[in-house]
Amino acid sequence: MEKVRIGIIGGSGLYDMAELTGRTEVEVQTPFGAPSDKVVIASLEGRRVAFLARHGRGHRILPGELNFRANIYALKVLGVERILSASAVGSLREELAPMDILLPDQFLDRTRGRKSTFFGDGLAAHIAFGDPVCSELIDHVHASAGRAGVRTVKGGTYVCMEGPAFSTRAESNLYRSWGMDVIGMTNLQEAKLAREAEICYVTLALVTDYDCWHASHESVSVEMILNYLQQNSRNAQKIIVESVRTLPESRDCRCGSALEHALITDPAAIPQETCARLEPIVGRYLKRS
Image (cartoon, rainbow, N blue to C red; front, side, top):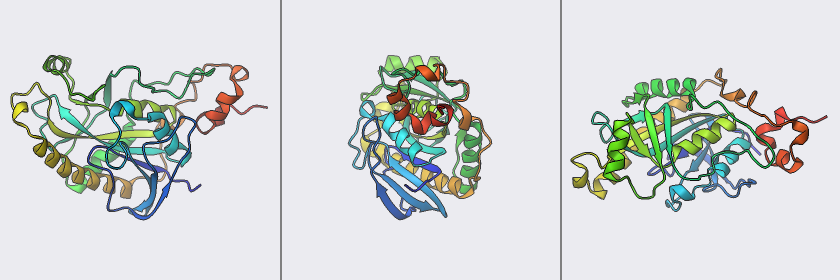
């Protein structure tokens, strides 16, 4: 199977990219089930990339239904070392207005029981997750956005809620009192699993509206939100194109060795089926004599 080092996960409003050329669609089988859709292998600015529509083409999958493990595992087995993702969010700050793009560097989990680890079944591992976003990649994407002429804000906290309903006003005001910046429904699990898979991860949080704390919230129509989403998706694509064009071939961050000191279980005690299932992720650490 062709190896590609750059992965792109498109969220709401970003189900494809016209700039992708020389396309091949592949179905990747994973031990965790099927990914959200076929993965599109294509060229972008002369680089081979793997594009995955997070919610499937036609937006068929709710946030709570997403098979995050299959999505990240599929990109891992394709050879992906860096993931650029995009996601629609609501703003929890006055200064983050619709059409703005935030590059969050922190997450707060408000989901319930989502599967967000590859480990278990006889293999215990505990990754460091104090800094959940690759610092090298977020700096690169922020600089790329500047070159592309798209204003982005670097740094902030993304609240990941369960959904599919949006927040109550009480919840929205609580998050604001905690100093949170934006709210969405998908990116925390991706970030955790990407770190376990030793993949660099960054997300472009596309602000479509103010969350319900804001006085103007009730006057925002679905039509307005969709219009903001389409415009912001176009800006996100500009950033992704420039980021891919100028991305260094090699990476110097610690994401690529995130599991080096994270695996706790004695290798001799790990069930063989667990080793086989996770071979693309932990194989280099569990070579048995």
